[in-house]
Length: 90
Image (cartoon, rainbow, N blue to C red; front, side, top):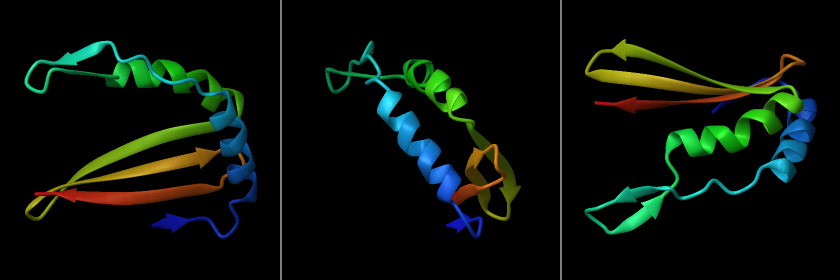
């Protein structure tokens, strides 16, 4: 994991945003397991406003690397503070 030297403003903003985020509705159906789940659109609809109201954004940066793809996800705050992590997928 990577992060800025100080994440105090990001942590405070994330705490406020999490307090305002409602559960995503489970409107999609997995017919194989006969279960319902919240799809990406449902998750985005409940997080978009609380994140924006607290000066937070999420960015995903894919890139091709030897043997697969790597996606870096970053949580950014308007102060310039960030937390990021990368995931390699063969």
